[in-house]
Image 1 (tube, helix red, strand yellow):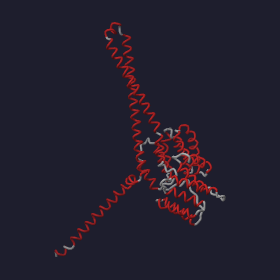
Image 2 (cartoon, helix red, strand yellow):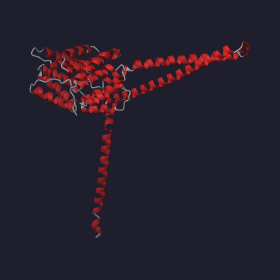
Image 3 (tube, rainbow, N blue to C red):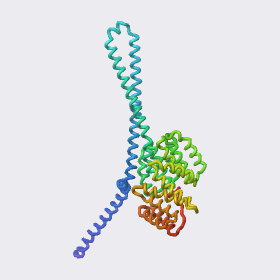
Length: 385
């Protein structure tokens, strides 16, 4: 009965086609998953900027290595030239007057060539010295560039942190600012032991970043509840300040303010953030931090609540394209001042712009506002594993 097989043929073809399509679908999804992080780097300008910093530092490291290699080779040539000149001088001393007269032109030419070569080598060494000093003077700028990716206000969500860590994993082993940024980020994820491992190579090399690295270590140890070790690291950080470039002092002060706030030492934190609010590169983060600090100190007088609204409003005005956190801080301040309608408006804006854990944070604040329940900002704000 061959006709009975005829209807089955298109079904078989159809099933095979569906099978092939399903396999292709799985492959496409797999490729899409693998490329998702890469796509985020292309879409998110912050991730693209971080990737560029990593590449720029690698180029800077290569340039430094080239300078050192050229310097060593130049030093060898200078030593060889000096030896050549000494040999020439000894030959002149040993030669008789007749020999010198007979070879005066030859000796004179050889001496001029040797001296000219020596001068060229010395001038090149001076240029290499200048190049290396220029490289050293530019080095602190990398810490400033990485600073924006250190999650200084502890307001990134898990996905944002993981995306940054993925990029930082490609950094040069001698990229110490990248190691500091990595330690700050893994601290947020509650991976304290990993943070300590990441920061140790920076400390062991005794660079001008020692104080920042040690203060980062102290912060991690505090969150890990290793208070004695944290105090030791903090003392060492203070002692290492003498080596810190002046342009990196604001970074150190912000880290110190954050550590004070974590410990509940709000007066000391306030002094630091008030000073930093006068520095253009730090003013937005400083005002937001001050607003949250005042929210945590709200009392019956209402003074702290007014200050919180004032600082949060200033921060919101400074933020040309407010992200979720600027609205969140504003909502916290309005809630502290018992301005319920304004608080709800701001927290809803924050919720619309937030993702992941941050959206849950906004939802929690909105519930507190609706129920008129007091809330505080946790300056530790660690995302546990």
